Length: 380
Length: 135
Image (cartoon, rainbow over all chains, first blue to last red; front, side, top):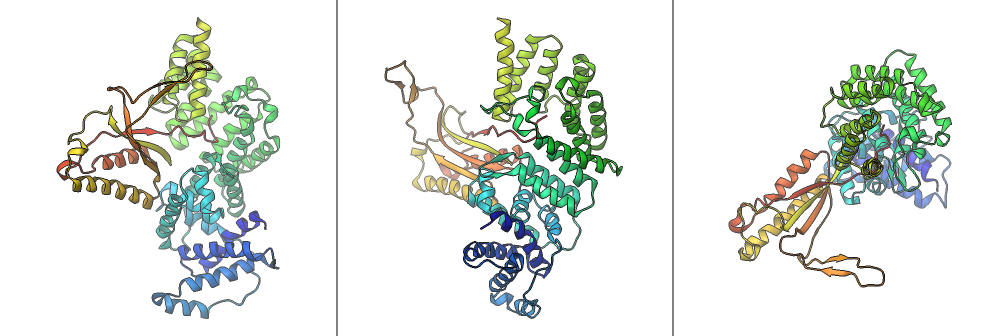
């Protein structure tokens, strides 16, 4: 039984049911039933047309489920229209599912859960494990999300930006358990970018590939963080970097710049540098200027201050940092880094310790505590 | 989503507004209090925000390594001024604001006279695993 095959087929089967007029929540349940049935039946009796088989079984399940008295009339109407069994249409309907699952009426966490389930074909258990919550909690989150979008018209074009943001949230979650959410986000974004002609979808795919390419170098065997400048660049995935750069260049050539393309451009400049010293910081600052124009995000200005510190020296970096909201996470860590580079280890050590207390992840906290300890033990 | 730990204290937290020890409540008041907590947890399960919860016994022991081959040193239960946790709940919510809102709701559990205890709850964010993107 090929789980990956089933997972790949599930979204298009769901899309076909919904296009035939099935209610989203009921269709989703029917597809899950059909998948369970497939796991049971296929090893004995493999179907010739896997997708057609799933559509037929899921549609029957859907009709069974809607047999309740209140739904009887509707079911009979649908039964009349039931298409003859046969090969399912080959075109990809799943695009509409992306828009439905990332609908603006959902909270980001619900949109993420529903996307992984309906578009990604993951089981509720897998999603719950990935987010470290009980399966019952995730089941509620998904069923609430399904109810919320059940009233949404399926044919209305969705908001690409919301879909991209949802996929980006999945990517940023990293991984835990047996589902690698970053890899899953790349898989889904790759399919989305192939299905729609949108430079920002390509930009997001390029961004994910470029970050993902450096993932194995980002942590030491003991789990501690390795800063970009100290990473072993031979461990970067050069194929993924080449693909990311190629996708990015094609997107940029279309001259419809957006946030994800600009972020990918920064990532590409890091990935392109043979050594940390050869990083083109001047160009990176220019891209952060573009990003600041596009988003007005304080995080962008914080990152820009780091880049300015590298391009024009720590004094200029601190001046740029002074313009940024000091309550931002990692503001103190950036200040510590710039003070150290500016030749003030005492202030830097104090700021590293303060930044460690504010850190939001374990690996980041440990890293910052080590930085403070390194400077403090040196001064004694 | 981010996870938060809501901590209830036996001691160590500032005194609640409705400060009557539980053993001096009427039995129905105790039942109402327990019911409130259970309803609260059930509601969070429905909204997909519940992770786990547990009540803790008041007896705790401090343990310390006392050198190779020697039995660990124990000290307990906690000395009079030490903090003592009565129970905890873990929630997984969209924002810090939501975590605070829920803690406030939990603090309104009824106590003596059926009035809210207004007890102090501690809200502590979990340290997360690092996201894929950091720089």
